Length: 440
Image (cartoon, rainbow, N blue to C red; front, side, top):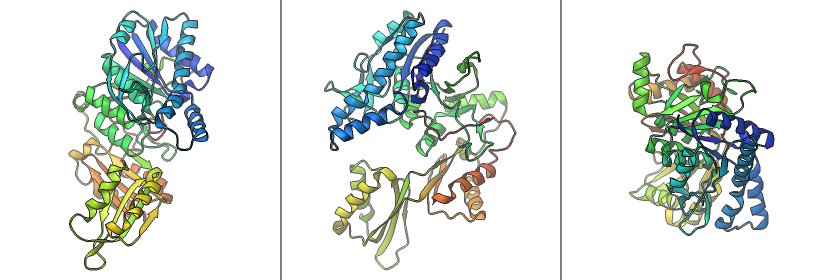
């Protein structure tokens, strides 16, 4: 017997027929003697519909009331799944965020989990009752409903798994695992059997949308094993959790797996791409101490994430150009903020470009393999792909390139690092899907 938290994304619960399919998957877990809690997203497209209602009602909407509206999508799904399970003869009930409660920091529309009081929930699960919980929502210290941002149901599921001491958290999506890259671009992309928290965190942050970044960070903090599975299994097929998905584990567990299988880790685990970047160039910035800090401090205070940064060699004595990237969704806000401070910052003009893409190679093997960055730069150069900016971490190298060259770059790098080789390795397994698809 195990204690399991199961999470189903929006495409998995998009309508009563799919909810019935989900109920069958949940019932099978409970029938096996497991204690089960289920976290659900809103039906596919429902959150967008609710967001549009808010904008139509008041373009300058109050974030607290916005959260009241958009959190209702998950509530509907939770109630429908509980009703469906009851119709199948299961003992089930729904628990809303405020009933547990899931306490959050009161930043509406982007709340973070503070603590979860899960004693009653744990007792309910231990009694054999299936708990159905709407993801994405919590309650602030002011007793107002909060939401956790897009993909927040992943974070809800991992947080609840940690709170109830679950043996694992199963994330059911429209894909059956994490892949070495997007197979719509590379047909021979392979499903990864095991990936470390650190690698998944980097992949999620640079464009792989299977899991919300915060959910991976939370799993790593509380050492919650997370498994990515597909909810789209045919009737009569083996249960989804008996099929090979992707297990996200600690680095210590990964090392043990490598030792037990007597295999060496590849230098690169996966390649991700992100077309939602925008490049910003500030020309003729004063080349003096503190000038760059004066640029990025107000951006940070405004909550605008800056990724790649390049300070060019000054074209004239005492002046330089500064290049950096921001998410496309934040470009207008960043540009307006900098233009408002142009006189104080002393730059000449702002040049922006949204036709760029970020390509990233990620792998813990970079720590023990040399030449990873050199392979990336040479492979791209051999195909005439120009690198506009670079950023690195201990297990990641990212470059900014022209958007039109995205697919070519991904194919070239996937081959260069041997990821489309048919040889079976611990970090991969042949299969067709996408580290870039959303789990809704």
